[in-house]
Length: 204
Image 1: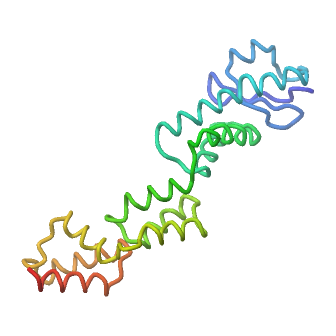
Image 2 (image 1 turned 180 degrees about the horizontal axis):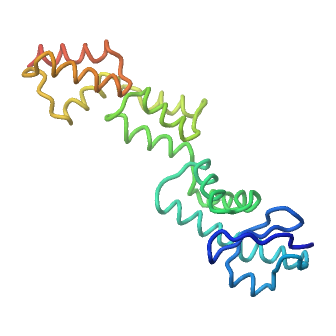
């Protein structure tokens, strides 16, 4: 195999292309260690050694670091590793590695995401946020149905009103309109908001 291009990413990191195809990213010292240079030859044995002992090991560590930093979906972690310059086959192996320890579980991620936000956001907004993360379909639908069993949109509106410490009884029409507007931007229906406000004022 021929090293056809070595392209700088930073002063210390370089993209290495083998037979015109992107192979991996290595540090400057590693290029010297393995005697890699443009136009030079690369044996199958050394190619495999670099990918498994250097690049894959680094990708696994990077994946673990990213998950320690914050919860991520499989799709988010895949995208991050791609952005970090890891080739697709290495990304797949690194994902398999962390998944084997249970560090990635999209169902648990969805459940935690929904439960941590259902008292602050509307169901519609939470669903939209999950879709933005590439999570949608039957898993999201079923988990949301389960999470919202016994928890209505009116409950979420009341939670927000309580946390915001809005005094609905003392609020004039202008202030109430601001509250309506805020809650509707959160994805709540006008009728649900009106119902909660009317009941709250009536019980005050």
